[in-house]
Length: 88
Image 1 (cartoon, helix red, strand yellow):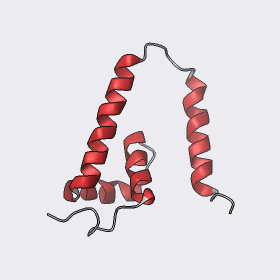
Image 2 (cartoon, rainbow, N blue to C red):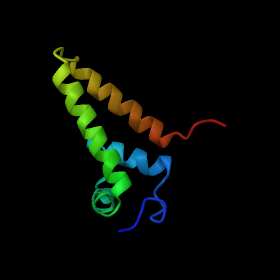
Image 3 (tube, helix red, strand yellow):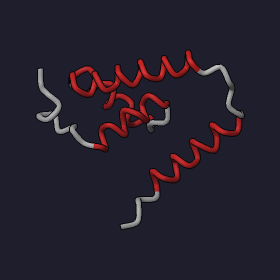
Image 4 (tube, helix red, strand yellow):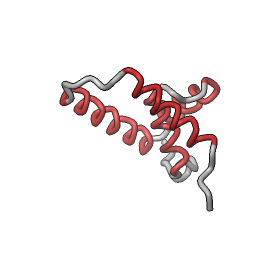
């Protein structure tokens, strides 16, 4: 089994894609690639599993419901940030 470094995925970009996969905002053309990568890379799979546990604990701990428009606002900002690279 290959390790994360040999697969070339020890990058912030790969972690960002894993988070987008979890958030359900990953472009359709990237879904199979990330899913397959998680099956092949134990380090990225651990990162994915850890984030799943964290999200489950947070979800169980939160009893308040955020306003419906908050999700739309957050997703719009994420989409904008992904398209607008940071200024140097």
